[in-house]
Structures are given as structure tokens and as C-alpha cells.
Image 1 (cartoon, helix red, strand yellow):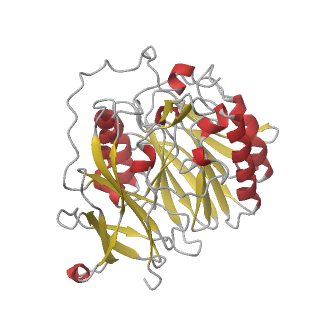
Image 2: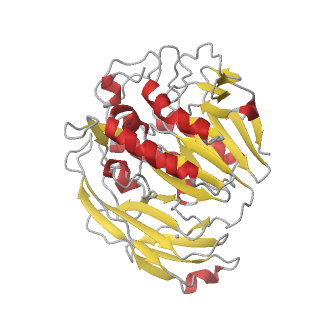
Length: 432
């Protein structure tokens, strides 16, 4: 596994059936498309591909970038403060990336090789636009741009996506792209797990990266893992472990529970302009009692000592399901007491392939500002039934959706839209 390279530039950082949970072959759902004939896997190229940004623990002074290339090539990042003139290209800073030249057995090729590169840029200036490109010194990507976070609680927006998972490029991509068409100025995007369907399919990961294309290289993507990012692992306490692509393809904050190495880059948090954003690895909470205790202890500390005005928690397994007969009682019992105790504002979830949103307090369903707002959403085309939900103020079945959340010191406004851009749901939260 790669060890992140950090560059300091001070002057310039019921649950799913077991077969599904472990990504084993399962009977097809009625809504699933027929299996497609597998095409030969294209090799990694000398030109940088799958370029993606991720926020760091301090997004005002740092940014992480990850990409891959053909094996045997080094990785470099060139960057500079962006200017309205093209002169920024004359004297960029050049830093070496960490390179994991790996043979990674994937579904299509047990001997697949690629070089996975990552770098964490630190010492950046807050609220500043930077231009950057990645490559090996001879083959370069185009120049991309990103903006660091402001130090103060400046208003911003972010996008929330549920499971893309199935027919990712052919059908799920329209939801993601419509979200960017609606909110192209989003500071980042969160993904509530199950980005792909088969954990070890490089072709499916290729579809996920193609769905976002250059957008992933300009807007940080912040995923939490779902059960489909896990692989059966008899040596793991939970019986499964995060797949080999996760830590190679993403460079996420490494500030999860210190005593739980299995949650590195799966449970994490970052503070962004008055918002504390927390990813919870729900597979670890659901399947591993030791991990559950460690994550609960860690989360308690994050919520007890939180200097931010707003708190958003996101995970894959919902505390409250939108689909009849599906429930995650271990996850709910572990997390809801802390959510209620510390008045978490918003809990964003995936997994159930339907839409539902409502407020729930300590004693049950409540008015929007009287309890925590919970939402379940799906971006891809696979659909489950949506039941009669006493907790939901709004629900919808067979609806691909995306969500845009606007954050300011005065209010947090959550809006849901269908994949065609039609308004689906909205709620505004206030604090005294």
C-alpha cells in the first residue's frame, strides 16, 4: 500500500445478505440489467489517467491529488497560483509524488499492473486558486485548477450523491453530470458508498472515473465505502476488508481512530468553512464489534470538541431505511445516541436505492429543526421499493437523484433534484 507523500511549502495542506456484503455472486435483482459481455481490459497508459482531488484534514492549506499511469513511470506534480494570464506556467513548483508500482489482481486480469501516484500539497494559501498538472516529467496532463478553503465560515455548497454502482457510465453518469451542471461551483462532492458494483472490477472503476472526467480533477471527491467496496477476507475480524483499489485511487484524510488501522482512509473527517464533515465506515460498525467500539469512541471525541457551527455525518448503511424489510440495527444503536446527544444536523446515507428525507429526534420523528435530518438517496439506475415511512417528510421511488447542500453561518439548505434536474425536495435548517 502506498504511503502518502506530503509536501510542505511554508511560504506558498436487516443488513444486506452475506453474499452482497462480501461482494460474492448473488441472484440478480429484478431491476438489474442483463450481464454484458466482458471486454478486454485496456492497459494503463503513459499519459496520466484517473486524476482526482481529495480534501485533506486542513482544506484551507492543503489538497491531495491521485492518478495512475503505465507501470515503471515516476510521478510529479507541478503547480502555481493561478493567474488570469498564462504566465503562471513559466515557473511552477515541481514536487515528486509517492508512487506505488503495483501488480493488482483485478477481475479482468489477475496480473494487471499500473503505477499509482499520490501527493498531498501543504502550505497552500487559504481561499486561493491554484493551477496544477501531473505527469512523469515527459508526459503531462492538462492544467487543472482548484480553490483552497477559506479560514472563516464563508458560504459554500457541496453535492451529495447516493450509490452510482450499476450501469455507471451508461446511466448513472447523467445524474452526476446534471449535479455539476446545476452546482458547478460546488466546493466538493461526497459519495455515500457503492461507487461500483464489483469491488475488483477495474472496468467498473474506469466507468466511475470516466463519469466525472476532468470534474474529479477540479472538484474534490470525498467518498465513504459501501459494502461493494469490500472483499471477503478471512483474516479480517469483520470477514472482509476494503478492496485494493480504494487506498491506491484515493488520498483521504488519515485521521480516523488511531487504534483501528482497518479504518484508515475509510473513517475520517475534515473541517470546511464552518462545517465538520465526518465519514463513518458503516461496514466496520456493522460487522466488527471491536471496530464499532473504536469508531464510537472516536466519533464521541469529534462531536464533543467540535468548533464548527454545522455537522454533517455520512455513511453507507442507513440508520433509517427507505426499503421495507431492510434494517441496520447495529449501526443505529451505535451511532444514534451520539447523533442525538450532540445535535448532528444532517446524516446522509446510501445503500437502499430509493429516496427519503425526514427529521428524527431522540424520541422519534420530529419537526425539521427539532431533530437531526436524515436522507437516503440513489444516483444510479438500480431501484428498490420505498415503503410507507413514518419518519420521512418526503419519499420517492424509482427516482435517480442528486442533492445540493448550501452552507452559511445562518442556515443550511438541503435541496434534492431528480436526474432530469426537476426539484424533488428541500428543507432549510437554522440554528439559534
